[in-house]
Image (cartoon, rainbow, N blue to C red):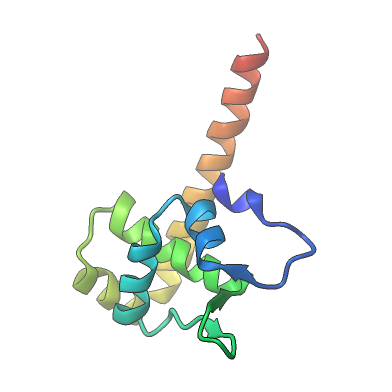
Length: 111
């Protein structure tokens, strides 16, 4: 899965790196930042957004709600607000299934 691209030594990620990790556009990240209270990357003194691993995990949950489940931004906002435990469980399941799929694909490629 894309989240496995984390570099262990990094504390902060640029918006471009986050977009690449999560396979979304930088403009989508900016829109989600405006619409979701849970997304609040820090900014450098020059105004450049920097994201932590926790920020990336939160954005991945939002991406799954929007892209995998086909929710609207308003629907995803409500889900994040009213059912955060369900969102966490769902995201963990999706992540686990993606990891299994990737491992199976790797085995197929080796054949």
